Amino acid sequence: MILEKFTIGVGDRFAHQAKAQLQACVQVSKDGADVVPVWNKSNREHTFIGSEPASVLAAAQAAVAALDWKKGWHVDADHIRIETVDRFLEASDFFTIDVADSIGQAAEPADVFSFLAKHPELIGTLTIPGVSAPFTTTREEIGRITTKYLRAVQDAGRIFRHISVRKGGDDQFIAEVSMDETDTPQTPPELLVILVALGDEGVKAQTIAPKFTGRFNKGVDYVGDLAQFEREFNDDLAVIAHAVATYGLPANLKLSVHSGSDKYSLYPIIRRALARTGAGVHLKTAGTTWLEEIIGLSEAGGDGLALAKEIYAYALEHVDELCAPYASVIDIDRSQLPAADVVNGWTGPQLASAVRHIPGHPEFNANIRQLLHVSFKLAAKAGTRYTDLLKANEAIVAKNVIENLYDRHLHPLFVG
Image 1 (cartoon, helix red, strand yellow):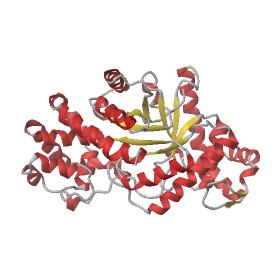
Image 2 (image 1 turned 120 degrees about the horizontal axis):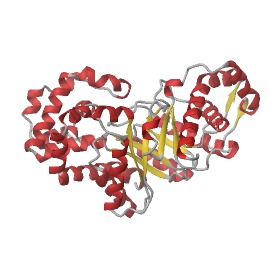
Image 3 (image 1 turned 90 degrees about the horizontal axis):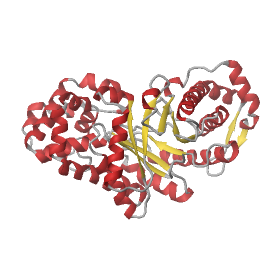
Image 4 (image 1 turned 135 degrees about the vertical axis):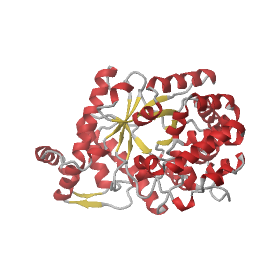
């Protein structure tokens, strides 16, 4: 199973927007860009909502049939670890193996020694075509890097082999290795050591999600040094190309940008790099679809608007509880969160404009958007009241989902 060159990770918390998401891919294909959807949902999201992985597969299958989609598509077991992977095995063909928690857990000294003995070529001055500058390493530095990351790679190997046995071979699924949810970005030498170790471990990763400099907050634009990101992104592409050529990693191995939704300022940088190198990319958009549902229900007015306001009011009262699991990927200025009684006086278009991510719009409020982004389980608590409203207002919700994914993500990134 080979992952396509350009893929978009689409979250669908409540399994109602797969057709609209796929329609956005249909539209960008008419522009000449073949982008394959990867429907993703994590164990945490299933737990919050009370759903099962089979629901993601069923929604994707229904959308593919409804639109007669003949190109590729995948279902991602998002951010799985060994203790959570089994519930995803039947419904998923793409597995995001998350080993960020193992980074920094020291590998066995004997394993580090063996790695260093096997790879003396990593020590010294390395000139990799496309990397911004040659880098010089010492045995001590490579030892430090190996000690920091080898345990995580070994964990990835255990999970990869576990999936392989149960799926009937390592050619029966797609593996991504996620190392982005950590404190510091990986340098070119660190990424190279990680990739070499993945090759040694037999992990046939087709995409890898490293940590980049800057803030990748949920549902809002990138915050950081654009020039530094461009340098890191291009360096990572070059290191991956070198590792593929030298260490036998899958030829289609590509970068994955996690929490890549709404990173509008990065899309021109990524597009230029892909055009220059011919590389592929996987962009995860995740929970923005849930926000488009809230926007659509707000615009619909009536009961939809009333529920959207209720969700905001409850979220405001429980902001600590809701934000705690996402503290590293949100930045909310609570002084900019309007009181519930203020929002209760808003019209549907006002609330929609506050949430819809159009930078520079006078009514857009990034703080409201981020709070609602992490409040999806409140809609789950509303149960059929929420999902019935999605069905009753399908047209206006779908319009927002399509426009968001096509106009603000797919077209800017893959067409320009």
